[in-house]
Image (cartoon, rainbow over all chains, first blue to last red; front, side, top):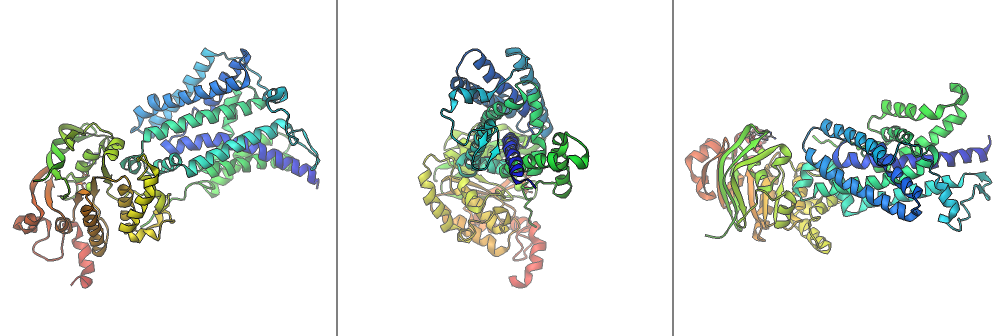
Length: 309
Length: 266
Ligand SMILES: Nc1ncnc2c1ncn2[C@@H]1O[C@H](COP(=O)(O)OP(=O)(O)OP(=O)(O)O)[C@@H](O)[C@H]1O
Ligand SMILES: [Mg+2]
């Protein structure tokens, strides 16, 4: 067995896994706060990165574009809470889900209307090269000397960004007052209201944070799949992640992403012969999710249903 | 006569635009008092409490007539968040603890509306002093605690907002008689510290024993009101709500329960 190669594969898998995790966390946050599956997650990624790309294409510099795009996503999230979620608050979950379907359609159309429907190449690595991180730290070179393995430096950069955002989010939602409020709301809406937790504020924070996550995830993903409607499909990769990790668990989204990332790569390499040929990466995640669903329907970290008699 | 803290003026409540649950309920909680609201299943106790704490809309209910005043201000349009801030907090029927949060996290959520987080630490001690039983369980998940402990968690959580008025919905539900007495004794202690209570109960015996005033509600209407002591003495109340002369029976619902427990009761 070629150990160096295996390590390369594992590291590569973990790095794409982190990116899956990031997208999955967006789903989990919204599901936890209001019990809905946010169909608009993919278009949020597209809209966010398109906004950014358009600004840089018009000569606005990297950081300014980033902050403006983040600002727009925050405003967008707050508006979504105010005008879509809040009016539907006590309605059927199906109504809420359909509202996010509508939101997705709106965003898709709106993106095309305001921007355009061209395919934009967004090489974030370009920004690395023009000195976004200058000088680039030693470990950010394609060749890692002391392990003697080859890893594209953008992948390292992307997984570091995604990883640190995840750490910050995990801390935020585990330890802070807002985080505890979110978990309380997720457990019992009525009780949360009764103790004076402002549901609407929690929702607004969650949508705003999800918008910013969508921006970061969108930019990192765009490197691989270009800023176009294919970006929405990239989000579909997060579905098996939440099936494995559980819709209500942030740690689950993290671990689920890593499991899928690594599993996919290992499958591609070691199972290609068994299943005949290439392309395992396309469906292997779903296959893993299916196995999980059979044996552990609530997901790896899905909330244990606490029931007492 | 002391100052009125909460005044419910002839309110009518409708669920889903059609189900008339309250048909004119009027009641009064004076400052510093414990008031019990008694009635059978479905008589409208919970609805009355939720009208006061403005939680009705979450169940598609609405006040269609009448008004509710707290400290002489109309609060029928004030949202739950601001009500808690102003000192009115409800402890829901069935406790509704956050089952995946620890006991201490549960209690802390009650302090989130407060501006000064430093005070929360002292208040946490106050809660544990009142509810010694849950102090030792503070690290456990609330979902794994007993019914009595959950009642204490829910009450402790409400206490963290430093309320002036607690709307307490069926604290005795499903608890052994001893534990019910323990809970009501704590209510009395909190009352001595200046917290007023409006308690919805089916367990009329205990509820009247610890209350100053009582209201009896039937089919969405108040049919009887008075001093708790006087209500306890009335023959019709004794017959209807305290069980026909038989000592120890406290409400219809509990009759079976007490039968089972009789040996330890005599
Ligand atoms: N969410 C709801 N939707 C429709 N009707 C409701 C709802 N909640 C209560 N009701 C109706 O309103 C009436 C009063 O119910 P409420 O829950 O206030 O009674 P209660 O006195 O608290 O009863 P219990 O002792 O069983 O808790 C009942 O007839 C009930 O069926
Ligand atoms: Mg009730």
